[in-house]
Figure 1 (cartoon, rainbow, N blue to C red):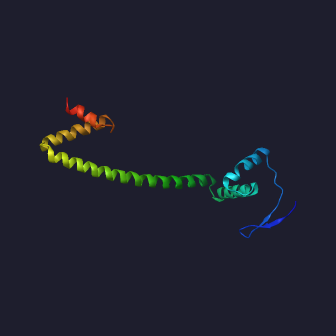
Figure 2: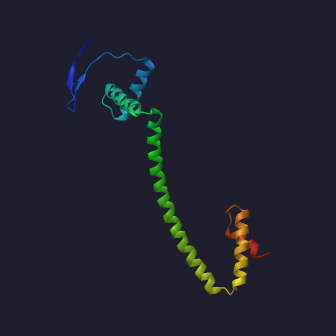
Length: 142
């Protein structure tokens, strides 16, 4: 085994050694190393070993990738939650404006309002929340 050393950017010496790989694995490294911004197949293989070592060092190796996936999903979910909250706030403001305009222009008794609320709850339940203005129009014109 030939031992040739060279200076790495991290100031750690690299050591050359013989490595036996199946041709299909070597072809895979050849295909992927440039796409991972590696200078050589050796760098790609070194990164792969470091990644796999991290996987094995995490005492419960089955939890290694799920932890990465879980943290990524949590970040995406938090971002989506913030977006949904902003949209719901804007929607609530628009709905409040609409309700105030309707309340100011319609002459409806408290009893009629309570009946309408019950009817609306029923309709929304029947349609599983998929209730449109057209549905309300058709209901009022019956």
